[in-house]
Structure formats: C-alpha cells, structure tokens
Image 1 (cartoon, one colour):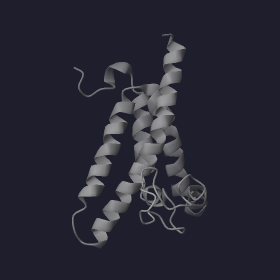
Image 2 (spheres, one colour):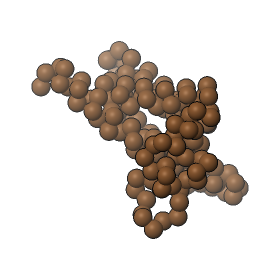
Image 3 (cartoon, rainbow, N blue to C red):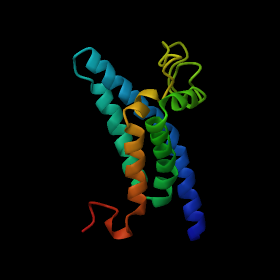
Length: 152
C-alpha cells in the first residue's frame, strides 16, 4: 500500500472515530455531573472516560488518524472557550440534538439532552474537547521514536 493511501486511510479512520469520541466524552461529562449532583460515585462516567481514553490511545499510534480526529475536537474546544453561545448554537445543529438521544440510545428511552443543552455542551464548556484534541494533535506531531511510551 502506498504512503499516500496509508495517510488517506488514517484520515478516514480518524474522522470515523470523531463521532464516538465526541458523544462518549459528552456522555462521560454528564455522568460525572450526575454523580456530583447526587454527591455519590459516578462509575458510568469513569467507564465512559476509559472508553474515550482507549480510542484516543489507538488513534495516537497513527498520526493521520490522530490529526483527523484531534483537529476538529481542538477546534470545538477553542470555540467553546472563546464564544460559548455560538458553540452551543453550533452543537444544536449536530445529529441527535433534536431527538435528545445518543447514536446508541433506544428509541423509547428518555431524552438524553435538553434543548437548552445540546450534545457536546458540557464536555465543551469543561474543556474536555480541547484537552482530548490537543493530546491527539501533539501525539501526531511527535517524532516516530517518541510516539509510544512503551518503546525503549
């Protein structure tokens, strides 16, 4: 396989991973908030963040995929940091925002998001998208020999 085709495949994999990373990060932020409000543990939040970390770890090994997923997340994080109102309006136009559900929600389930807080709002306002995006972008920019912490 040629090098250009390898990069194109990596970019497609990164864009395909963008949707699960976006929605899983938001679901984790909401679960953590629910745990905080209830003054109790939030194991679902931890589990969802671990799923995001696993996807990010896989993407970080492939620079083209890390950039394709990391740059949009970083841009979303910067937009939330600079203009939260416009970012929330943009998030309201994303898929599943009208139905209030997640891509994996059952059709008869209770709404997951309210109209005033579309999917992505909580993770964007808390900086999780910016943090995840910068980790992916920086991992893609590292030299090949320093990309993995497991390598000697």
